[in-house]
Amino acid sequence: MLTPLASSRWDFDAAAHLLVRAGIGGTPAEIQKTLAFGPGKAVNTLVNAEPDNFQPPSWAATDDEQDLREQLKDAVTPDEQQTIRKILQQKFQSEMKDLTRWWVSRMLNTSSPLVEKMTLFWHGHFATSAEKVRPAYKMWLQNETFRREGLGNFRSLIKAVSRDPAMMVWLDTVQSRKESPNENFAREVMELFTLGEGHYTEADVKTAARAFTGYRIDQLDQSFRFAQNQFDPGLKTFMGKTGPWGGDQILDIILSQPQSARFIVSKIWRFFAYDDPEPNLVDALASELRNGQYELRPFLRTLFLSEEFYSPKARNSQIKSPIQLILQALHTLSIPLPDSDFLAFAFRQLGQIPFYPPNVKGWDGGKSWINTATLIFRYKLAHQLVDGVDPREIGFPRPPAMEMTAARPVLTPPISVSDLVAQEDRSQPDRLVRKIAIRTFQSTHQEELIAKFRNFVATRPTPFDDNTIRELLILMMTTPEYQIT
Image 1 (tube, rainbow, N blue to C red):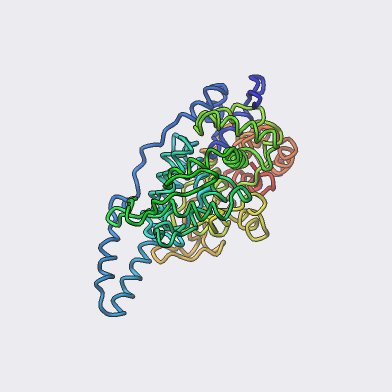
Image 2 (image 1 turned 90 degrees about the horizontal axis):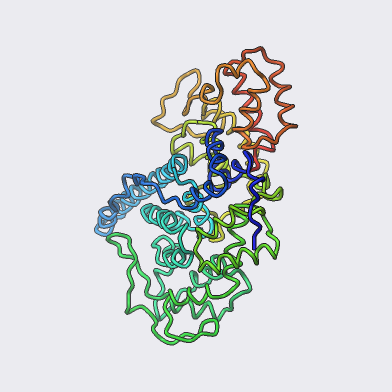
């Protein structure tokens, strides 16, 4: 069993740690509110939340690409076909940028941060890329599936994923038929989604592939449909059990393996706590999940109320992913949300574009987030977000419609200092430094850094003006410590 968190361990920094890991961090007021709840209510508030009512992208209301696809079928000349294909591609690219900003906006404005954080976790776990999946509507549908099912039951979630149109295109079940079963999904559902390498055989892959035949997409509304005439109804022996199994039965057999719970909890723990969980910890976590019949809410409640989650090994132990880096900065520092073109550019430079994982394994994470190029861009981005985005300074291509001024073309304005500090803070160096450091580092335990920042402001006249405070904030955001959460 995990060790329940002692009430004496619940303090401001513990509340901040919870908000960072179960969401994107908190403002000082949000951290204080979470602290006042106490650990039980704080965790229950996060775990029991439901998805917000959030307006879908305007193009997601209808699949208006259908008309263009029909026109493409009817096109007679190569020039007509090329023109329609170009329109379809431009439409797709525009919608994917819009979808990225829509999700970022949703993560920033949600009242259910854990719902969105789990949506992000499952996006990395069931990594599906828009490089192959068309139209953008399919990627939105998958994102909504992760949001709807992501805190429910893992058994229900993985069955929904097996029928998800984006996944069916990504791993080719949409092409699988009884005469020629496609093995891609059958292999990855065991290797990457439920068991891990070494816990299944090639015979299991071939048998499972037969069970997932007949999965199709209704092109009218991009929904799942089952083509009975393409399904292999014959007897199948899978992991020692024989029957006329379909896809759902294969998944049930997989989840009956003890390794499945061990695999899932290890990935969840690495995402929320730290890498390389100890074997006895994995055993305890797997027992929690299996005893709870794969229900995720009670499992996460136990995780977030454990001493292990708040241990020194768990705190300040993760390199921020690009998504966490950008969203945490926007939220905790009240930075205006950049436009979709800039967001797409920034995510690409940092190495994590939502809806475009590099392969079926997803992002490696951890130390892979940092190299010479991405670290330099992280520091440049800190300047841009605080001082206002100037596309000339970071190599951002000028959008044709963007109005450029001769002096300083900006896509977003400088940060509003008055949103971060009160007027009286400007004349009190220690108070100012600590107030901004809590927002920036989500922690009160940064004494060595605090001393350095005090030395910086000591050279500046009081009361501190906006430029001095912005320079202080940039200094904080370009420390190695800021790259970690």
